[in-house]
Image (cartoon, rainbow, N blue to C red):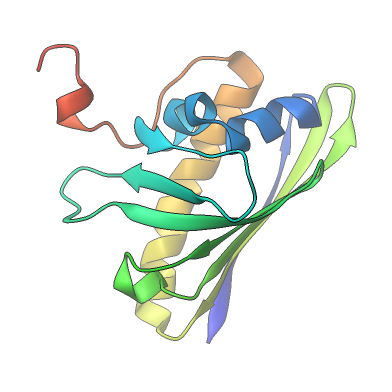
Length: 146
């Protein structure tokens, strides 16, 4: 049916955004604090979220200077076969991130996913601009008080 699309400007170098999207430390700093992010194309990112019954698994399908792409393999079921693509352009301390997650067969799912991705985009921008880690999802087993 459709894709989830975002485009936004970030006051950071493209390399800063790329590192955030291609490293365990980066993903853990803006999306979920329980992440394992491989560097090699063909390997699987493993992301865990509070209350999710299983880890999300995304295969890294492309990793270039300006494009990072993932494909969902088995969880969550409504994401299986969808592609996530980040495109980064710009230079110096001014970048543009273009994001696409698609293709969803269910409009309700598409809307729910868009809401969460919006939160992730805000935190990615904040992290790239300030270096302060504030992931959208914090897993209780990773809390220092647990």
